[in-house]
Length: 295
Ligand SMILES: CC(C)(COP(=O)(O)OP(=O)(O)OC[C@H]1O[C@@H](n2cnc3c(N)ncnc32)[C@H](O)[C@@H]1OP(=O)(O)O)[C@@H](O)C(=O)NCCC(=O)NCCSC(=O)C[C@H](O)C(=O)O
Ligand SMILES: [Mg+2]
Image (cartoon, rainbow, N blue to C red; front, side, top):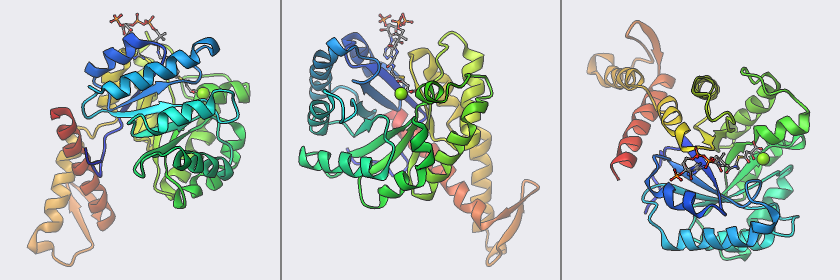
């Protein structure tokens, strides 16, 4: 299936690779992206079994238009090379590598994927979750120019552990990391996905965190439970008001009376050509979401 230019990634649901029931259940869940995990959600004794379960699930298919990503263990671990070998040719859209800290890490992963026979359109996603990754964030993002690097995924649990930080509702401790990662992602054309919200029962807390991620510019949020899907899908989609306003901006610039003008007033707001670009992106994403949901 060709990759749409504006692919929705509002909701990116992790599931442990060893949980075959979750892998099956995912075929009917309203997630834009499914992340089959071999790393932290899988116990050391279950790694080989989980790797086989993911290979079986991706081989059998049935996930429709959902994007499939396999999170591997780090290449420095005893499981990483076998994970990458399986993930490279299992039919997934991308692999997600944990705990990268440098541009050289991206080069190593990229070379290993090519050597393992990964298709040219397979993406490389990486977890931004180590203090050194935050300090080296530009160098990491810059590797996108020479590799398949396509996305940053924030790992706020590992960041909390490494920083010895407190997880507060405003995510004060992670603002520098979130915002530097966002700047680097956008500067080098990468997708940016926010970290997980651990308290499955706290729906209001999830809404607040999704809204904050959306405000910061993230494309979507990583999730850990199906009950979190609807909130992320709603918050990270353009709202009906956003789409209506975007269409008004596009119409205003297309009006022959406004030909040659660089600045207009639309719905009482100053509107420049840069807003036209954003309006086109909003409408394209709205259409991409509708097409994805109809598929
Ligand atoms: C957290 C969980 C272990 C809770 O599981 P459980 O107790 O089974 O929850 P429920 O009984 O409420 O489940 C209801 C049904 O939903 C299915 N389910 C649950 N979670 C998922 C899921 N993630 N994907 C698909 N399906 C799911 C259950 O099977 C139940 O189905 P049924 O039996 O038919 O009723 C569990 O939610 C879970 O394992 N979540 C994912 C954990 C995970 O993958 N963690 C790793 C990624 S997070 C991370 O590492 C962050 C990052 O690296 C960082 O540093 O921040
Ligand atoms: Mg992590």
